[in-house]
Image 1 (cartoon, rainbow, N blue to C red):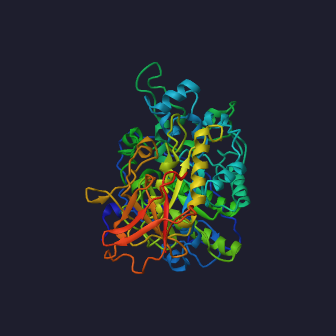
Image 2: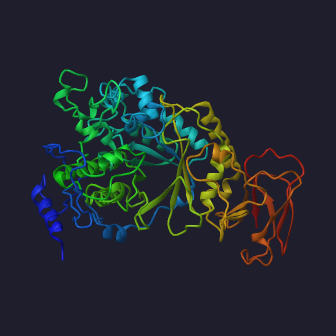
Image 3: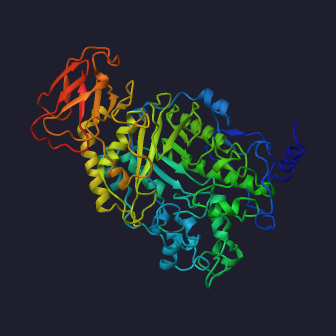
Length: 591
């Protein structure tokens, strides 16, 4: 039996809807339904005065959005039933570049600059006050107006990334800052109207196709509404104590100013700090508010989720990406918990069903996929692992390990080291995954010298050893070597930096893959000393892993023969005595 509280929720949804909840309709046209007006927002209540609604009792709202005709309906059941399987290219690709770039790079403060510039004492706040002014007078909206990555050249960068060995790109479409990097129909705060006045996603799509690179567009705006709550605060000390930040501005406040006609609510959202836990979460380094529903703002919540979905559908219609990506920590966007706190709706199912039906109409088949970050394994979606790499092999589904070099947005003094990138790739592919690595662009959109050199070195290594990487799959075990607390020693998690660059493996540490040619490949995690005997215990005659007889052992990229023998201690390979100009890791081919 439903609780009385749950019944009130249901009544609230039915009564407060801004537009009627009808069944999703379909049309042969790819054009999605238009977005209703934002509408009135309830008067603010005191901070922390309202309990979030119980998300477990709140029914999932079915949004009234028209989707492209086809077999996919906006339910997980339909998506899982009709999806033909993830394209083989993803399992084969193994390495991609994460193009995590937007106006927040201009802060030179690392990730989440837009949010943190409203948090006293942070690097972002200090840099913003120094470079732009106080956030009560000059806020993020003004950063957007002035942002001009004049050296951003997607065509040139796509070539650099391809030369580095990347087979696909993840391209940021909109981050938590709510600024669309395309000619957005549903968000006037976008890169065509403001800042560079360029259709950046359009440029990237063209560049990727020219280089035969697969590409996906990423969307991080699901939890913008609680992420932006810092913009509604004020300094707690000093000469600006209590002076509201510019998130509190209204559309009327823009009259006669450069941003006249641009509603700040469409950028910053609305003040939601009346709900208990929202203010505390806004002050934290990362944490989302507690699970729950913004029960006093159901009309706004429905409008917000509708706009969220339509913006994604806008991109899939106009740019035809090979995949889409949604950020978050919950099993789906707008789940009512985790990063999906605030509302429950079928927005993600609508977007995915529309995307796959579009694929059928455009491509004749569904050879696209959708990343729903951290969703449990379901047919039709792909998972990612941020920062870390699983300890064990995961062959049940394609997956992507993702991490930045330094941070997700640029800051000074990052460590650039090709070895840590290569080892991250090796750790991922040995467990049947892909690696997607972000090399943050400078504020002007260019790569600095350290990044260029690093990518060039990664490209050299992948060209030499690509047969062990591209199209490979995991062996029966990911590797062998030193054990730490009962587990195989691995490259440390987190963003790639000095800790990973200085991490030490030794000559007993190996990783394995099986190539498309069915040969077994052994990666050393260091360059062996000249004349060293390497012992791979997993290939001992009685180990039971490698069933067939070993007939040949060769060093990939080395023309001369190498000496070897196999016995009950392992496969013993004698590394050549002459100097070989290889770096980071060498690969042996076992046939």
